[in-house]
Image 1 (spheres, rainbow, N blue to C red):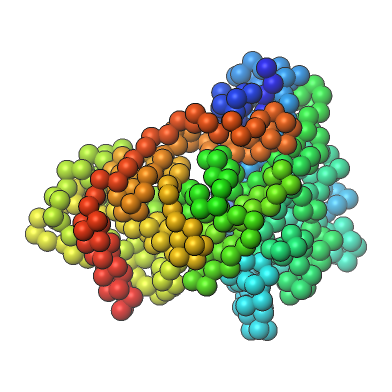
Image 2: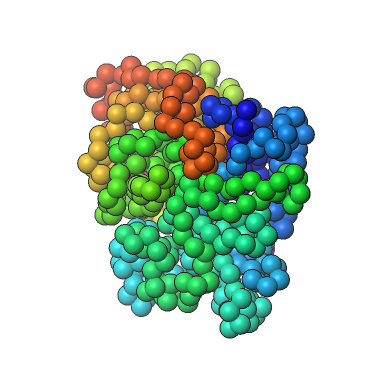
Length: 491
């Protein structure tokens, strides 16, 4: 039996998983890292801590599984996407901590690029709206604000990238400096069509292409590692994907029109749109899904800030329930004719409304509205926001949605998944495997090594939900949501 080690380096921690020859997850070990939040609101991670955790979870994985290192065929890596860092080629020392995707310190840099008239060109070339959310603004900030980074840039020893390229470089002892197309497409520096660093965009950010890693296929050989001697011999790192892309692959969404929704603190809705990029005119972004088997495929993606976070608000701030596990019983017990809507515009509204000044609102309550009805409105507002994105994806891609694959903590909710299916008038399949991102990267590695083929996506475990709502009731519910949103937008 040969095994794949799948690493998921996420925002909160690092997980190591063991996949067997059928792609099944056998063991899982995780370790969290510190969330560094500075007084000015900057968000950082310590890359040395993360790297040490990678080595530790792999060591623990072998210990708890009893698998011999000689039976490890290869490694796959998924990672938090836009988080960026820079380090010195000679010393390996990073120029400060990694700048986390949540950190907006590059805002002034992006405003400067917009003022120079480049915003439209940035989106046309990269598929991404000009924003400090992506890696480019974070790297540019490091170059402009750290003297050691400026000196390294002048000496030609400045290296930068996303967490995957840093881990690959460290795990291979500095022999390999690579990233895959999915991660590169989230930096706001890669040209969507050429799949290479765009010289114009790089120059607007003050970043030289030679500072960046080589852009590679997602299932290529990224280098060899023994995890600092944890393994008796080096094995190939043969798959790297950004976490949302890895989840799409883990769900087996390899045909145009197939899509997944991750229900976490926020949500990432991603649709495979095939081999030709489609640029959104209404606020979605276009990225590479992956390049596997030599074929590049693209995605449309929409992100929602408040999905699972709305339930956290209901628990911790409103005290409506003690934990998310109580939500199903309360939502199902709510009065059917209650018309309460929650519009969770705590930090404005994103796609397709794009109003950063919008304020959150609870609307439509009646005398019968109580805790059950409010909890149901929390679940429903998650589904409404997802539906907004899904409908927009159908419109801009031209692909009808035949089904939706779901993952993430909130996907365990029976009421939410059923309501999502009712609202979309399409089946929803919720994955039993909660580690779908890491699994997807491990599967990509197995494809690259020839260990897996398409049959690995068969017999995956899902809970299925099919539409039970009438067309009339669906229109009535969704029209009520749109009316509530209109009232928020009226200010």
